[in-house]
Image (cartoon, rainbow, N blue to C red; front, side, top):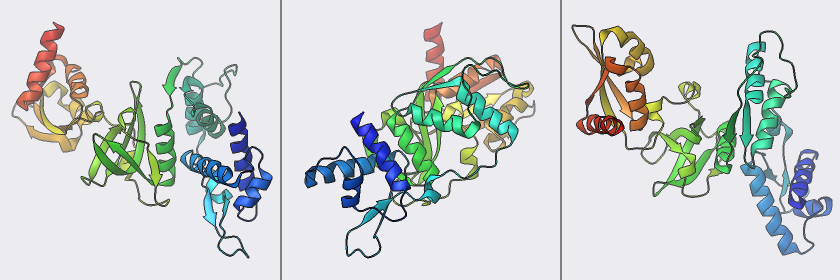
Length: 313
């Protein structure tokens, strides 16, 4: 509680100032820091880094009249959320999400508060207005530190660095998604120079934001929603050939996309070529078509599905 109170006071001081505060001014204004200069500097650096990871835009500037000593502040224009211009239906959707989803973890309270503030306060005892859903089954979502840091980086368009599958990555973060108890980060991996999806609980190091804000522009399609099931995974990408019969080809075109159409046969059946990073995800989709769809290649992917079905039988 001592550190939490100190962090709250530090945020308030850095926002409510008309000039950058030097370390000496911060030590004088904020209770909870050690009187020992070395201990103060160490604790302040940790607090400053934590605030930045949480999304607070702590900037470093040189105060007027100072020689080489730097100061710190949180500019209101970078901190305060501009009016996003949501219409009533969009606000209702956010209210519904804030009521239906229970966030867990050390970052949960601030994110839940942000949802409620954006959509309008919706308490559990509130009676839904006409047109809203009266009862919603609650969903518990665990919020971990990596997801909170990634969320802030997406908002600021800052790159993130972390180790994953034995390699150091520098990624332009485009979108966060939550699927079956796990957080996924989609973005552009500068190493192989391609779009990748990372499961955040498999990150092998601390995930940190690096570089300046506004470092990249996310493509518009990256904000359309979570990736399809066959892309929610970190397996080596492979191209799957899926044959769908004529009666279900229109539905499959909607699900897989027109770009995935490889061949339309004389009987109306359609062959799709799909980039897959999750065998289980593709299997669940194809089995949803029952006997109207078939994985025809590659052989190892087809054999994997057959083995899974035989084991189930």
